Image (cartoon, rainbow, N blue to C red; front, side, top):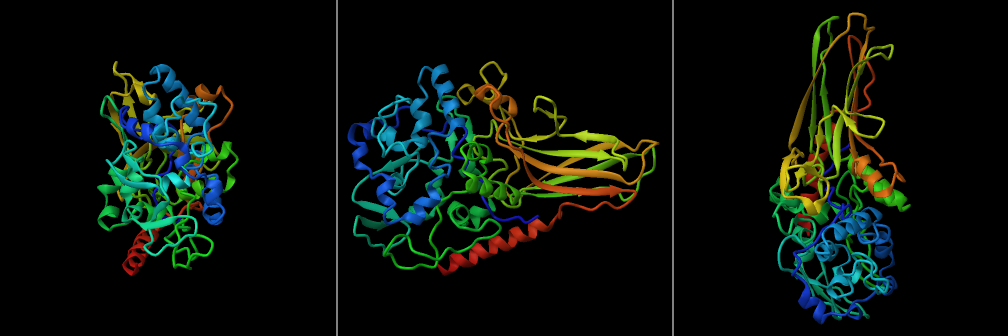
Length: 456
């Protein structure tokens, strides 16, 4: 299995992301949606870039059905107090122009009704803080970007180093609960504390290049008539959202999300070569975050689940040991789930972001770190050899029970097999994975990014 230096950041998707409730009134008082340019205009000169963005989770930041269901529930149960908190990052033009809230405004403008769009992103002048929608947006004839020699017949262009830094992404990919202070999304923070930040590998280096298994340059032009460059950032912002891209029919983006997940971690399984009937056996399963510059999983991780499924059977298919399989309702049985679990004011676990007051536990895997599991079982006296050990590392966007509650059983949550290993005790069994190989590829990818940036 190939592994790379990738972030799984963009998940701009499942639940509220936002800002403290009083952070935007001055913008709403002074800005109009007419101050922004709709992407249909940008498309005239930037057709390739807008085609990449269309279908992405930035494009669907507001109309994402999962987000909409959670937003409506949050608004109802909080009497609308979180509406700005959630929408500031999901429909920013709507918020800063005063069109949102209400969250169901039927007269939303074209400029606002495009999620996280071109002109908004390229009108961000600076940040007021990391996280919670801490952007300072200044729409004008001047558009900001990463080049210092851009020219356009339609608008002025100005270079901004800010657009090349992870702090730009951190404005919305670091979320703190507005009242309890609990960190709900630590994507930026985890990156800032990692070796990726030390090596100056930015979010854009992984999420705005065409490479999945390694950093790749993308020669081309930023727009029609623009100079040809060694690298133009791609704008599909591939992340881990297989569920929403799937139900919206965005198949290209769904496949990119699957591939990114499959390059995020390395799975290694240690099993004994031989064991006798009646003998107790311990197998060691190690999961290394070898390809993500943030925790695995990341984003608003009250819902996202990564876990191992371990099945041990004899050669006749008789079950000896099982962990991490799903029951008839889609719940994970006896498995170790890597996610963050939160509690409400009464100390009960909750999947509702607006209720969160504390962290019960958080066992997600930090960048370059390894989590190890030990699975014990006894070889039956009547087992036929070889004993087959089948291990998978799996991921899904949310528990099936949550999706059933929100959508009334309409959707099955897809499960992505990130890595796998198959081996045998008392005999050989063909392996489906390549334990350990991903770490080497990940190091090569880091070196490639470093050398490229040295030339910039």
